Picture: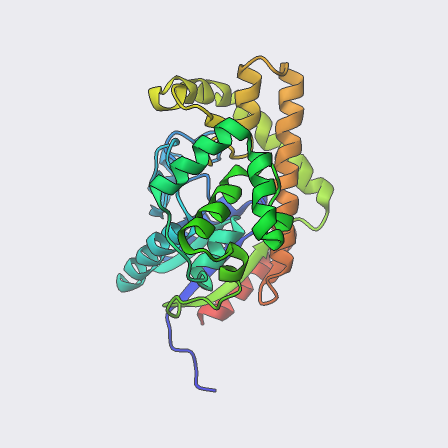
Length: 317
């Protein structure tokens, strides 16, 4: 087999609160790298504290890409991410620097590195029609409708997941083909322009990760997270939206729970407990996806930093 002569890139993956940001910043500074965010919450403007978006000081340490691309009332698909992130990677490589793909959104990593199955692009008119039906009937009713023609997708998508229900219905209406059939088709994307070292950083003890999640959330609260959500709620586009909790940005972990708290549905202690529990569930889903990445190497970021740095050095030569 001929040697892979593509330039190098790093995929730094892991569950939320596992320490990816600090590691990516360190490597970018030492290796002449630039960070490409692979996080579905960081693409939204205004989601800063609760999404743990790199602050001004962190951005000054290394160039960052795929941040603040959409307003919180807008949508952003995995296909759009794959296009934008690939352009960023190609630009970084053209300047002779190292792309560091850092984040925890598995769908985004898959879309970028492996490609997506070809299917109809998003259609605003069709989406708006589905949203109107959901406002009248409710998303569980639309989920039941999905099950009548695509039981495979309905079994995979939860009745309370409006974003994926809407996309599945949209694809079927535009093409007449169930989304599960589209997803079985091979990806049509060209080969990724770099050879990639996949590294997963995750504490092996789940209790350690849970403690980090709770500690980080408390720091977010101290840093003004609820004030941030107050500001989002005051935006005219969100205040006038008929179902803000169905928007992908507001469904980001922590934000949905904060929104309910500010609606008076929970007290402070219950809000904190619900947000931390939701973040733990997110980490669990992320770890499940990561275990399916058979070509990734796993490291404990607290105890195996030397091995982690050695793996990187060997890959870069």
